[in-house]
Length: 239
Ligand SMILES: *Cc1c(COP(=O)(O)O)cnc(C)c1O
Image (tube, rainbow, N blue to C red; front, side):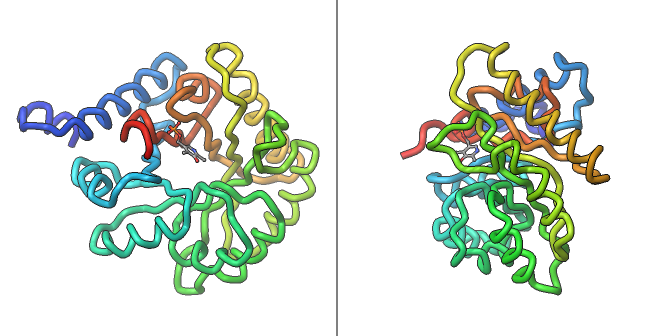
């Protein structure tokens, strides 16, 4: 679809051009890392951007969108109800919001308490497939960030892996801001090691490292990201 549009030479909006550039950036990062072109996918983080922008990118070929604020997401979902968008929740989760999240999203990247996972499991509608979840890890141990600490992860993952209606897919992290590529790689490598450890010790098959944003996509892809979550690089600055 992407190639076709370029060949046709149709007039493209700035937004679609930015999205194409981000897709190219991801492909380049995968090639540099020696990985296959399909080994990581782009989640377009549309928080604080209007439903019209989502519709435009969906039309261009972007199927998966990430949202961080529940009410804002629900409003856009209602507006875009006729489009088969795959919605991912990536923001902080309060207990009283789990019912809506369990029924309105295909993925939740930001599970950071066992209690939240239990509620999502109980509240996932039976007529929907399993809810894909990632456990958020506070990999840089910052007071301002949420997520399980690495040493809490094993016990939590063991409990959560047994919950019905959820499919635990992997780990998510937002590391400390860092400009240097080599230093960016370190926390991503640690997250990959944690996921491998869970697979080895708990016999799990976690396959999804959700890591890498506008500022550190290349480092995350180098360390094995399966989903990169990009907002600013596609949509521009948020209001
Ligand atoms: C906002 C957000 C992103 C996107 O960040 P950008 O720097 O705009 O690419 C990714 N992940 C999470 C969890 C976010 O909240």
